[in-house]
Structures are given as structure tokens and as C-alpha cells.
Image (cartoon, rainbow, N blue to C red; front, side, top):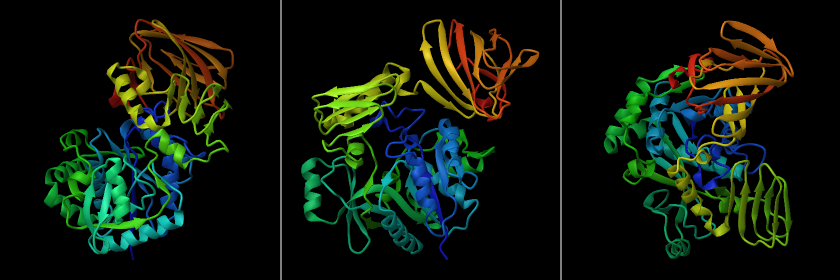
Length: 471
């Protein structure tokens, strides 16, 4: 009887979906199509397959708490395992780490089904059928990739050329438009989906031959890794020494065991705003809208409002995305170039590439309402029963005003409760903690002032979420 272990790759930032996707709140965590995130949709999709183990998620360390929160919201959180990457090393080390972790807990004939967390698949029955075909080939010792039946000459995807039966003749880089059209005209070419199936045994044998240094590094990263509450953290030193490479270059283009399962899944990697426009429901004028949007004489546009009213007049084939701290306007056919803006933001060391004004923490969230040179105002939300770390700041003073709920405050040697409309002052250098002992969310306004207001001015002394190492 086949045993299938889904592995969901949930790293990456999706920079081409800026300003909605940020480094600390990436594409897979966004609700782009409906009320579930792409990650949640992927977890539900694999959980509904017959005879599969609970999924294993491979996640960047900085996304661990929001990922756990989203999975818990599905009611399957306790069953899911989460593997933490302390450093990013591309898809091949991520998959290799997952294989080595699974090898510690499952037999070598277990089939791993590797899926990106940020893809859209609308044909669920066709997906289940393709998974079964791939699992059968994996049992025969193949390393299987899923080839998507192309719908148009796409230049943003790599292609797979199918040989006899399910064999792979070649992997093709992202082509120009003429080459992509020639692939469609010839037939036998498929979009490279980045989804795979193989047994633990086959993968390890091939990596031993084709990428032994990577296999050795990731095996060490698992052996030296540590359990951290609900997570398993790969060893940072070992993973830092691992070569950085994609699974296509490290393995798939070199192995003679590659096989392809062709599938028509209504699939998209939603790699850009144009791709999102392609797969979204449109009005009679071809527009895709989200949020508070008002349009006049507007056609074939994507207009998304996250925070305020967005109004358009006389636009055609234009992209408009508004968030609380950034607005993007571009022709839809230039959507791939949004990543160039993100590169400029990084180069200028601006915060807009990294985080939104609302930042999620394991205990709740905070929203920056006002930010100036020597003061900052935040709205802080603490979930029922949650508490922040016991901490202190060297450079800033804090004033807290409770807006809703009840707060338990540690301020130096004093521990006391605050209710609505009550406040307290935390001087720089004082040990302090904020807790929510109630059953409703705690809301408060925090006013910070001082010579330095960065989030790295936090020294943690006790933390429920294992963040002492981040001091």
C-alpha cells in the first residue's frame, strides 16, 4: 500500500506581487482569490487526497508563527509538521532537508509529494488523478515532475519536453515568445510546475551521485537540528554551508530517472499581478477589483484597495494596488517589472519591501499609525491568553493606553491590571511585559519616544515563543 507524505514548500517572498506581498508577509500567506490564503488552499488540497500523511511544511524561520496560525485556522494544525529554514538556500536544499527529516520518521519507500505553497489549482479531481499517476511512477523508481498543459505561449515559465511514454527528453529555460509559440505548435511541451513525486530511497540515491555535498550538508542540518515547541529547526551552521541551487539544476536536469506526468489542472503560479488578473473573475468590462473601488470608463484593469477608496477614470489595461503605506500603478503588461521596484526599495534600505504597517507576531499584531524621527504611535492587539516576552529597551520610553479588554502589566517590580481608558508609562531600561489575561482581544495604543525606535532595540529575558536567540 502506497504511503504518501506531502511536503509543502512555503518559503519565498513573491516580490512581483508587491506592495501586497512583503518579505515578512509573502505571497503564500495572502488571500488573493478567496477568503483562504494560497498556503491554506494548498494544505486543504493535499489533506483531501486519499491515503496521505499529514503535510510537512518547509518554512522560513521569520514566517513560522503566522504560518502556524494559518494552518491552525484550518483545524488541521496539530497534525501538520513545520520544518524551519534558518537561512534561505533555494529549492534543492529545502527539498533535501525535508527528505532527510522524513527519512528519520518514515521508511525509505515512502513517496514524497513536493508542492509549492503558492500555486492555484482549480481542477481538484484532475489533480488527484495526476498525483496517483505520479505515485505509481515513483514506486517504479522515477523522480516525477508534473507538466502543465500549456494554454498559451507563456514566456514566464520553464518548459518540459516529453519523450517516449512518461520520459523527459529535456528541460527548457524560460523562452522568448517565438520559441514558446514553437513549443505549442510542435506539441509534447509542458509548463514546468515545480511539483514533484519520488520515494525517499530514489531521491537520496540520486543526490548521492549528483549533488553529494548538498546531501551531506542537509543531512547534517537535520541531525544537528532541534525541536522548538511546535517546530523543528534545521541547524543554521550546516545549512549555511550548503550550496545554493534549484532542484531543477541540482537534480532534475542531470538525472536519468526523470519522468513527467502531463496534467490539465487549470494551474497558475500567480507569479505576477497580470497572472492574478488572468485567473480572477471579471466584470462585464474585464476588470478585477478588490476592496473599496469606484470606476468610471475603466476596462481590463486590476484595481485593488486595502485601506482607502481607490477611484479610476478612463483607464485601460492598468494595474492599481493600494496598501496603507504604498501605491503601485503600472501597465498590466509590465507587471513582471514590479520586482525592479522591490530591488530599488531594498537598495535604499526602505522598510516598505520588508513589512506592512501591520506586523503579525505569535501573540497578535501591531500597526504603525504614525512614525516620526523621535516618536512612534502603534495600535497593539494581544490575543486572549497571550503575552509578549519579558523585555527591556535601551533607547525608547513607552506609554500604554488600554482601549479595549484587560491588560496585565509587569513594570519593573510591579505587576498590576489595567482596564479601558487606563494607562501606564515604561521608562527606557525598565524590565516589562504585556499580557492579556482575558477572553477577548486586548487593544491598546502605544506611544514610543526616544533616540532610536527600531524593532531591534529589544532585549528578551523570557519568552513563550522561543525567541531568546533573536536578542
